[in-house]
Length: 226
Image 1 (cartoon, one colour):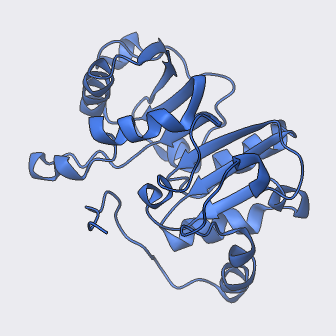
Image 2 (cartoon, one colour):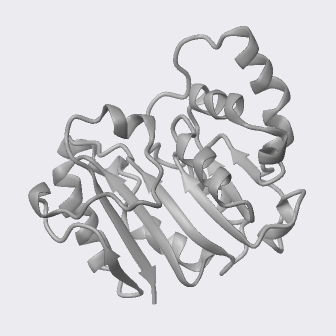
Image 3 (spheres, one colour):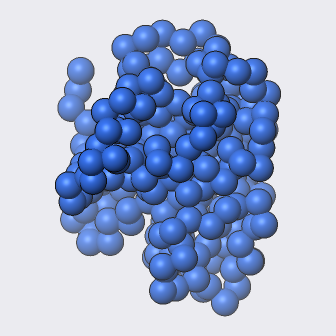
């Protein structure tokens, strides 16, 4: 397999506290997706019936996933996050009911592209990806034309990719990427990099801890598969 260029930063931060390490060691294996398995239906991944399945890429501390599980009782979520401390933070928030509707991949999301079936995801979230601001690091940006084209087949017709960023130059970059992919239409979000023109955050986007700490206004995009 071709080695993937890493698009994320650290895999671990400070040492996990004992109760978090125990959750990481015992609960995560129960929720972890096997990147070698073949999946015919994403709905079969969960231990209870779900009506929709969403994918969140780079879920950070898991606040958005937890909030969506709370307000959408028929929802199943696949969460991807390589940062062990973020995974542990999500695990400590979960109820037993949550674990029935959640599956996790604690590595690069691109490892799942060959096992997830086509046209079964209703939404894909990419919230506050690393903008890799230095020009020499732009190749590490997660959002690239090739990457979005790999997500495209996973979405149902009229499925959505929802993106949030507080990096103003990245806003222009994101718009350029999606302009190059005619299968997507922008339904909501910025139309330029001036935050004064950006619409307010959508009410159905629960706020993340990262967003609460952000110094600048964030922009939120909704792109729909045509």
